[in-house]
Image (cartoon, rainbow, N blue to C red; front, side, top):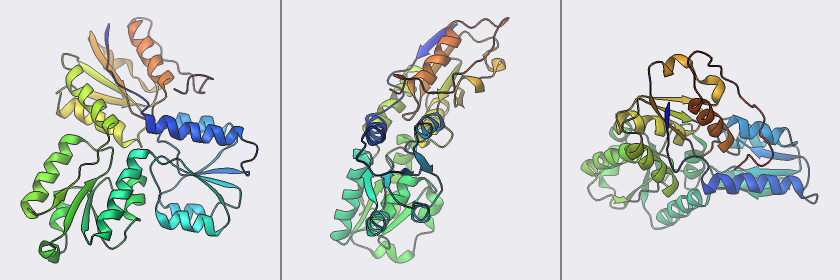
Length: 309
């Protein structure tokens, strides 16, 4: 079987930086214990479980303010997805040692939103409802920023916004660039004076463009990544809707179903920006050695030393 190894794929620099922040905190005896992460440090179950095995406490849930109430002392690490000023302030008020692992690209969006608000702009933020990145950005300037996920959300905006002279649009960093452009075009029809800022990060764009251009000719695209990873799910979408190649998402090799491979000779493999490389390597090795008569799927469930990159 021919395997198309889409490149680039896997960890982006924001994810690498966030994991290094946690690992350095673990090694530093001066960092107050226990060490908490407010949410999943990155959206990958295997990476999170590896940190839990090292003593890190991951508090997971949709509301960072409520999660903070579970921290009884020690250190709290803010995830790569960013955090609202309110959560930061409350953590400091409680005397917690705070470490910020926010992706630099997400920080740029926070700074942009804050600057626009100071200039009296009302902001439309294109993002995924329920994702922690929008939660943090929306917390920068509550009351001046509105989350829109689709055209229906745009239509539901208050009519008086049409009279707003200063209106700006910005985005979550991990969206589909094609969907985002379509929604921005729709917003421009309704609000032609809107100032547009597309903040989809370069890592997301490059991985999406790689899928769009490299999987053509494949009979199936396998995307390795966590179901909660927005950028992973967008790669599935790009394969199907932009490249026209059917796609499946799996967390690891154990979820690969051999019936998907029946009769196929050319399969593309890529991975989300929060997927450890060893998980993708196992899938590629399996496919390259695939024999339909003896096929079995196995998975190494623990992150091995040196396999985190």
